[in-house]
Length: 255
Ligand SMILES: NC(=O)c1ccc[n+]([C@@H]2O[C@H](COP(=O)([O-])OP(=O)(O)OC[C@H]3O[C@@H](n4cnc5c(N)ncnc54)[C@H](O)[C@@H]3O)[C@@H](O)[C@H]2O)c1
View (cartoon, rainbow, N blue to C red):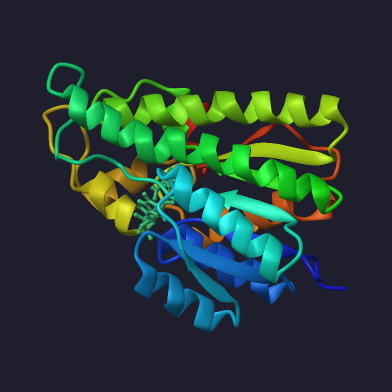
């Protein structure tokens, strides 16, 4: 039987990169995918490709989350998994702790951290009413180390790692049968990956080859590598896994 047979899954930031790859992977295992993105056109393209449905969702907007959950409750009648994937790296090229403005700091937290919190908060009731389910939050290896060139981003991903565990314990203790886990990709070849490679500074590697050489496995990751891990966490195969952090980085953080 397909691993996501009959499961309804909402993916944020599904228009490109890891979100799009996840939509394809989960749909390939029988999921009914609701593809959402700030960019409605790309969400629609993904939805069309996976024979799912597109919804416009700015993850930093609580009103948008309420609308999307009402829509899914009304039109699908259930929700089995939420993939909190949408995220941004930065608003400007450089973001060290001295240069980062409060405005930039808050803008990154609004999308990356408020977005994940709001997603969890508003999905829990529908997941619970569906008999339980899975929340997968996209954090990063940035949550596990200092990230002086993307200060706000690293802090937001640290927050995602932490809120994941709070949601996991809360849902388990309430008996909701909702699991919540975080995924921590290393450098993945997407549009955001290109942005990371574009960062400039005296003490950071700049070329793709140099960056790949820093990874013990000797290569950068692909969106599909992350999608495979998300599939495991979204499916019932991970039924006893909650509050966990799964690193997908070719060994980057173990050296
Ligand atoms: N690519 C990497 O190297 C890498 C590494 C670690 C973690 N991640 C995380 O994985 C997730 C996906 O990254 P990606 O590489 O596919 O990024 P990407 O930039 O390729 O795609 C991000 C998607 O999120 C959407 N988005 C941005 N702001 C949004 C908002 N406010 N509301 C809804 N959608 C919004 C964009 O339109 C885009 O479709 C992110 O949370 C990112 O931080 C990526």
